[in-house]
Length: 334
Image 1 (cartoon, rainbow, N blue to C red):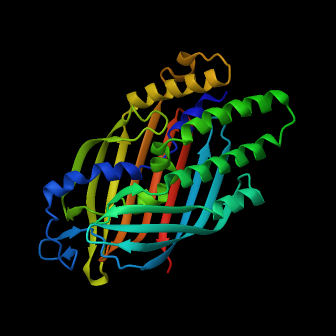
Image 2 (image 1 turned 30 degrees about the horizontal axis):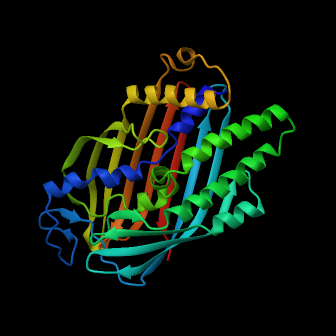
């Protein structure tokens, strides 16, 4: 078992969901109770990100995710996936929006793919509700999203398993599948991981900012594999740019997860995986004095009506000399 691969897999997550928990403190600093027509106030260099969306309004976004992996033996691998998402407001009330995301035009590099998997990807649809400001509140079709993810996971594992003739390998794959399906079947996982682009999309919506103000705080960020043990993280948040003449602003966010908690979670995860596969692991040898690091950042340009124009997130996960960097971009193209 490659211990570092398991540890990296544990923390291969974006940090968008934490933003939903995170930025409420800003409403204490800058009141957004009174909603004006313009979100950019050049007089006092403040910006409030509120959704002024119309019923049936729709935009198309291009989503790209690149994963760069480097292992201790100096081998490197690049995986990438791109897609388009049509984002549509299907309901609008005084207190909420209902939004759908429909996906198309998948392009996958260096990953197992099949016609069945492509069909499942194209069938993905996300339906969710926000409050009146545009803050994400609930995934309305989470069971449907879960079932689609489970079907895709089974197909992906079947593709990988079909490349090997070893009975032992297939038995191990069955054990991995059982453990994986148990993890990804929870609503917490679906919210925190499976709908990452949506959570990233809503990262800063519903919050207010002042140019020159740097917010530093400790927050809790989700632990996908052990939801009852969230991580502590140090965060820095600030308004980077006000482009009033072009009706947009740029906000940035940086996060560092507590390393001691990462180490504990890595031990628990490796122990759980080893048990599910019937293997014995020396956890001290696997983890002791290893350097674990999880850094992430998000930058977003958002227009005056609360529509993100461009978002980029970066997550760097390091386990000794093994690294994984995930870069996701979401860009409005229509």
